[in-house]
Every structure is written in C-alpha cells, then in structure tokens.
Image (cartoon, rainbow, N blue to C red; front, top):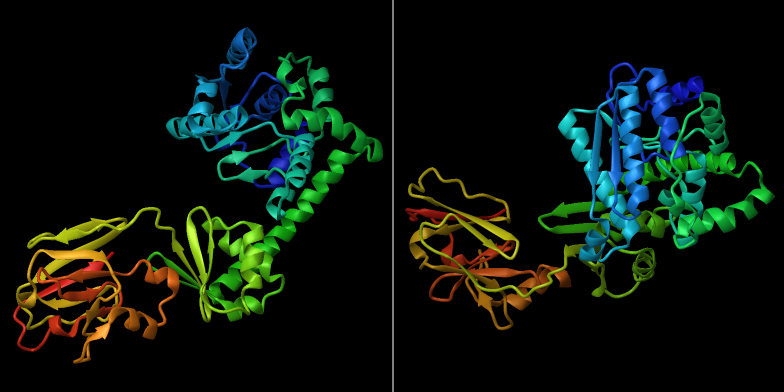
Length: 443
C-alpha cells in the first residue's frame, strides 16, 4: 500500500515527501491511524494534530490520551485543542456537526501557519467520497457537489483518497496497529451515519464495487467541471463589466451561450443567487426592463441590455457632512476623498466620472452628502438650464437599482455641486478664472 499512496501523491502533485512538512489530523480512529503510519513510513516530515470537541465525555478524553501517546511513540510534534463545540453551535445558530467542522479546520490552519507547515492531511478515502457524493445528490447539487471530496483544496490534502476502506483494514491488520472506535459513528441521528448504515449497503448489493465506481465518476465529473469553469470564465470575460460596487452582464452575450442558466448561475455564484432564481432571471430576458431579483446580499435588475447587480442596502442612507479641511468622508460604505489644490494654473481636470473637480471659491462648507430626492434639480455640466435629477437619471439610462444608490453632494446653501459618480453642476465647474480647485473622489 505504501507504493500506492506514494504514486497517488506524485500523480496528483499533493506535496513533496522529501521537502514539505505536513500537519496530520489524527482523531484516533482507524483511518487517521493508518494515514499517520503510512506517511511516517514514507519518510514525510509529520506533526500530529488532535481535536477534542467536548462532546463524548470520558471517551473523548481517552481518544486524546491515545493520540498523544501515539505521537510520542513516533517521536512527532503533537498539538491538541479543546473546543466548546455545543456553545459555539448555539452562539452561531448552526448544527453541532457544522460547528465542529468549522472549528477544526480553522484551528488546523492556525497551527499550520504558526508552525510553518506546508499542508494539512486528512484521512478521507473512497468510501467517504461515495458518501459525500450521494449525500450531496440527495440534497440537490451541481457539478461541485458531484466531484466528491477534492484530493487537494488549498492547503488541505487527502493522501488516502485513492484507497478503499478494505485496503485500510488490511494494512491495519498487517501492521498490527491499534485504534480507537468512535461510538457516535454508529448513531443514525446523523445523516451521514444513516446513509452509511441503511442506504449504502443496499447500493453495494447492486454494485459491490460502489466506492471505486463513485471515485471514477468523481474524476470524470471533476474533468467536466474544469471544462465548464473555463467556458464560464471565457463567457464572463465577454459579458461582464465591473465598476465601483456595480457589475453589468450583457444579456445578448449570455443568450448566445450553451446552457445559459447553468453558465449564469456559475457567474452569479459569488453574489448568492440560487438556481431557481437564476432560472427566473433567464426567463425574464425577453421581458420589459425593471424586473428585480434579490439574493441575501445583492439585488439584480434586468435593464435594457444588461443585468445590473449591486449590493443590497439593508439600511437607509443618512446625511453626512464634509467640513472645510476634511480629507475623508465615510458614509454607509461609500468613501469620498477630498483634496484642495491652491494653484489651479497647472491643474488638469480629471475625466473620470468618479472624481469631481469643483471651483473651491464657489463652494460653501460644510458640504452635505445625501440620497437624492424627488424634486431635486441641478444644472448638468455643459447646460445652462435646470434639469430635474429624476429626468437626468432617465436620460442617462440609469438602472433602477442604481437609482436607489445615487447620492448628491450639496453646498451649504443647498445647491447640488455633484451628482456623485455622474455629473458636476455647471455652476461649480472649474474655469480659466478659477484660483483654487477642490477635487472630490469616490473611492
């Protein structure tokens, strides 16, 4: 088995046995005991990490003592952490299993960094992979859930993922190794245990080589996922345009893709839109502009030619002031940076819409930053007449969700100096006779 694991490590470029120090997660169970022994036998530089979750009383204490002695037996560095798992789960409103997973991986990474180790090895094998794939399929999943457990994910590596559970049993018997049995693994209270105890035996009657079959499927799905990922990246490069806190997706480009809903779902994944919502978005492509869709964190509006995505504003904007001499203003996530230029002779007016150049001597401080209101008017740069801000936004074809975010910077006399990110008021423009210039930049 040593040769099989070595070959698996090399074929998947997991780590360098000679050069990379590894933190090995050891629970004391059969799988992790085998992994520790195998890596030690292969000559890897190893340190041992054990998690005590405070859930199993004296049994958990005995596990920790067992692993501590095991590390001493091998002459390896040993690290242990004792977690208040139930308290953390209650605090965060999550299941005990989720809490335990989060706590252990966070701690593993802390130890890895503190000790200057290259990777964290966990003892997942083919049976774990089959369980994960079927569990994900039961809950509903995309390609990511069907590729099973990744052999390498950042600093996490799984050197035993190419082996079945029977091979681990055989190795354990040959080496005469001892391990600790976790009684909670037999409890059907947990979904994975129920699947392992009740469901998988039935499937193995249909296919005795289920674990190997699922592993092969995971490899093929992983390859398909890579093809899809590249296709999605190419599509996003053509369809996507990002500005400050705004993402635009060209609808025409999206409509030309194969499996449009699937591609769009992958593009929108960072914004939290579910598969069902994405299907509704695609169905809205031929419809009128203005249709709104929400995720927990973002709002998407179907505009004329684009999908426009912005962060959801969970609180109302207030009113904020920028006083004379103040250089920074942070307002509900928007940051403005102000700079006074005393000599305007060599000043070059910036062309970016994110920066306003204003005649400093026409401004009355404090400047006020606020959300625009119905009835607001200003004189857009280049025009001599008044224009309602609502009409200006329509002329500029500003999408609905961006209209909600538009703010104005006003002088102390109430006059709008700048529609932030869109247009300076002509009354405050910089002219040849201007002596001082105030620039205000949206960061």
